[in-house]
Image (tube, rainbow, N blue to C red; front, side):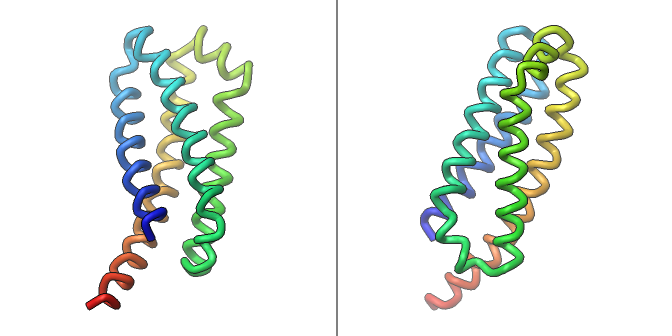
Length: 131
């Protein structure tokens, strides 16, 4: 349960931070920070999800499927941000590339929201069993 709660809290804060950087991405400094933050975030999520793979068995089929969708989405994001063509476009045509990042992050956050909703149900059930 501790691992799930840590995952939940870290991801919510980092998603907010990325959306905040997107909204402020007018300057070159913020643009550099955004790409680096997004990359770091995706690698952190990948690592945390891999550490949680054994835990997912106890979560139920729907939650496990959402985690698998999320893991695929994270890998897609890592591939996107590591792609030399994407990086070149990011540097040379930021306005168009930011739209790709926004679309990706909206889908990413939507999947994360489904996981959080499922985790909340599991956490509430767990806490009710303690009373």
